[in-house]
Image (cartoon, rainbow, N blue to C red; front, side):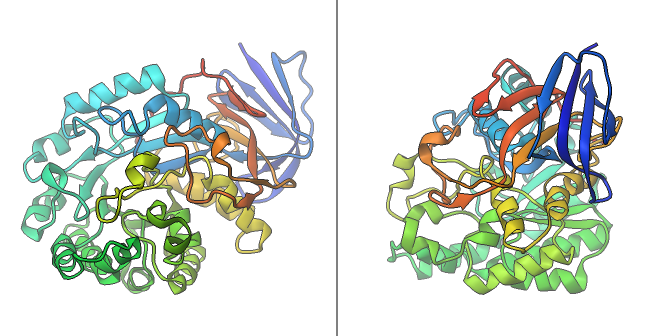
Length: 436
């Protein structure tokens, strides 16, 4: 029996209120939460005076690049970044090499993750135009990922006739990258002579996103199929969902689409390039309101690292994507200091609501019986995002230089300290997530 006692923390309770007190962990679970816990000689004691205790972040959309693209990132480096950022669980996408489109590929990823991941892990299975049998039997998986656009080759499933059989059969959650591939191709031809990276946001414009979101919702309604819209990026999509979103549909937004916009191209060039692209500033405002109103359900990073050498290529040869797991929690907690949202809202968007949407049991709350995936953050001190401090293998952030608060001081996975005051415990291993 291993006991760990967190003493004198400001604890976020499930009802959104705070308790100044103690939390006792035993054998990877939360055993007790109280204003004072008296226990004889716990194995480990953490003095959390001045710190706030939150449920560990569950990041429901990441690209950790292994297998096949380990020069950008791998499961070990990515989960070191997770631990430093307070991310205790992740759901990873299928566009690796080989693609995660069969049970065998899923099993191979799970085997790799068990060896290398410092935090808990789950994986999507990717849809193709001809792997429906695999989509129906794959296990364990958090859901089916469909690239409706911004993809090429096997993973692109863009036409309604190809999408419909996937929506029609099975009950598993479908998560869509909603962009209209036909419109992207058309607009690439229109703007093919322009190499300034800001053109990316015009090629893959707001209508490109709205077209695909409408199609996905049409099919979801037809078959009453559980649908999740990944990285919602436009105000027009948010307002469409405000009027048309049924209870079985969820949506997410990235910190990038809340906090960055097309003005970033002038500042950081191709480092601002992602799919779907950054939008005009007014979209930031509408997306924020949709998040606050519950039209958007939670937050994901879409952590998608590329090397600086790759990003230095001129557009359109520069790849789309940016890292995010290390900075997402302090970015959002800094917004609480600015009065844009509350700490309990951030915890819901980044943990509780994700666990609920993906039916991950015993995660997302600080509550007896729940898994001891927790993060202690410092909300009183600010520090800048600096490349030299990043754990991600790609070694950069679009938020470099931003002064943030809410940086993790201690991260616990399954009751084990995986990160503490600048030091990683790389002996810790997470567990495969369950999906009820």
